[in-house]
Image (tube, rainbow, N blue to C red; front, side, top):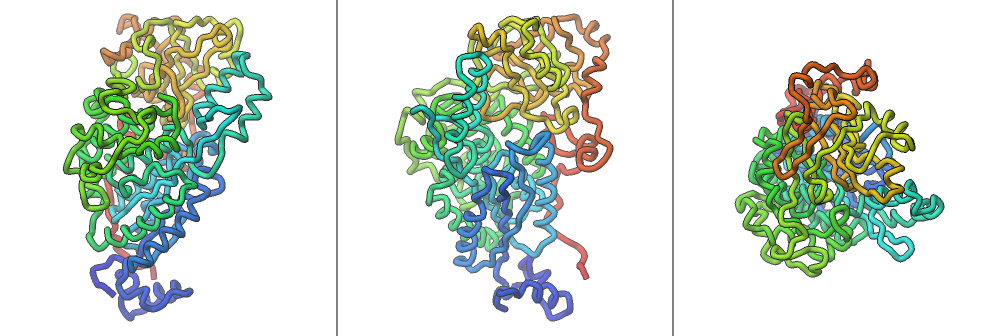
Length: 572
């Protein structure tokens, strides 16, 4: 066996331990499986309880065939799978746990490289965090978006149209029966959300980072080309081991800045901010919240996709996909940032073309001139907050209104449809206690439903402020990720109903118009504090004690950085 191969630490030699390691793996494997061939783990997040990833077992079979063809030995490795639509209180609570568990399993086992199979929102981020920390050669295969659903002859965007249709029911313009009939039409096939929500965004971000085979990120899940790409990823994983191309070499600051450019140009999810910050933290790459504004704010929005536009991911793939978008903004990319192919990302753009300009706009005909994520600071966000201009109402980007404060999600749901609620269209809805510590886990609740009495009057957007997140499929003028959160002593916890709030996106400000001395003299409300998470044991306790704030990626403080792939001691 090749002495320099990592797996040789387990399998090479004639002593008792090497015998044990080989013998227990000889369930059909020939002796030459241990002669120095790279052993490739397939970190597989397939699960029936993660419906967007339920097809990844089939994808893994294609990866296996590619690994065998290239002379490697594939090993299926089921890892923690997080289904955004099902797990409570929020999948984000376990992103760091999934990353930590995957990292430890990759390190603990006799593997030389890994293929990462993800799709649903938190799966690709957790896999990339793990790969960065263990630093073994790795390639991502995104599971792909589902096909476009239709109802009554119109396209349905999963997620985005859930929010839209549910508000129409509350407004009285759509019957509950019609709403429920649309349910079976929305999810047409295997795959993750077909809007530019977090799942599609993170697949594109993985490609922009250079961690996927260029051109594969947006392939629809039922498309045969996904299996073709998975096969090629298996072959490539073996080559990555041979070349010793690891995440620490591949993922540079330029790679992350390229991802920020891509995020802006596609109108991607704000959730990518916390994920990119966390991945960079595992690598020791210098990346801050301000980089998203400096690098991305002036990037034109070119992808006309829900929730910021009209079309869906099947259209995006047909129109040319991410590479077509990146070719239009090629001058904004770091030309030296590499991909898993060993070549720079920019080198893969020469043959990219836009095949439908109604879906992907040319650079000189953008949907918006500058639509990247904006970072706000001010009295209410000393460490920053974010807003997605592409999904917001232009007339609300500079706004002053009276605060209507909700001390918890439960408080909001109990009162939002009260006909006597003291609210008008200019009010600013403030929801707090939803940050990493407070909920816990920073849930997707920030796109607060509009009050029923205003929906009935035709109001469809209001300024909303929250220390939590919102779904990447959601839309509206929503200020997110306010840091520090209320549960960490942030000033959002001191706001009272009736306080004048000022949002000025152009000036990058989020302020409260009361004297600083008066604000500092306030104490948090008892109702808000009573709603904060107070776990006594288990993962939630560990999480609340160690999670960092949103502007640092909401990772755990003791997981920042990497530990490499070395294991010092034997198991027998």
